Image: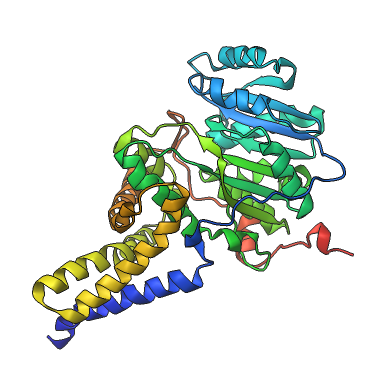
Length: 414
């Protein structure tokens, strides 16, 4: 009976301990950084192939493809758009956009072939674009989603960053849309939770195993990609960006992951249901399709995000000052850590105390992801099922997670 009576205090102490760790010991994931720097230009601008997987993207290409074709990059570069069996005239719109932008000579449209067994749809499209670019002999490949608007100096800044810091993968977390209630509640929280899972500074630290990237914009050194086993090493990956980052880092590659407002996603999410489908596509894959990890995630999210406000309200109503204080302090720390992300998105700080509500929905989305997988419903890419993916990791990433296989980065060798 005594233990039951002290349960609120125990939960409150556990939640507070979790938030003190997240505040002080998780790579400052919460501070909306690092930001993309302006590094000096290299002495020689390397050749870059831009690979754009595209399926039914006709509506966004007038904005996004034109921004790619309008780059001010001083070196040689070419765009390879992979039309993955689109049904909306994506290839025709792409040609029209290129002609209107005066960039037809910079665009090659690759007609995608059916996704073979063992590949996820997007990675297969990336692989076809990379293969088509081989004759161009690039030194870097920029993988970018078809719904991203790039700033005119975007490619130049990414290459300058990669060359100045001897990086093998440089990735920008683009600015997501926050129009309407659900996007404002959930999309900044999406970036916040992503940064908590893959602290950006830890990804850049070669001493840590953390490897993360944002799939909307990833500049990869082709030599590093080959050392990592090529895209074949992550053929079945649903979370292609972080899988690629793990493969590159696993062979000694150096990463950079950060934020920029200049890259923007123009894709809407169709409200709560659309955001739920987006998260459910990959959430259970992130947990390696493990019911045990799912249970731990639900318990952890509940303790960190739901217990503090519940304890605060319950403690005040029941006149239990200790649980109320523990809940309020934890909720306060949580709220404070979310404020930098809201400032980054230029949203009112009044959204910050609602982070527990966002966490509640993301927990539901994760449970739904597991439900879909166990019901035999595989993930989708742009509205097309690609088959139920089994939890098979790439050999490179698996070896790295065991502490094996790391090779010295070229800058570390004599």
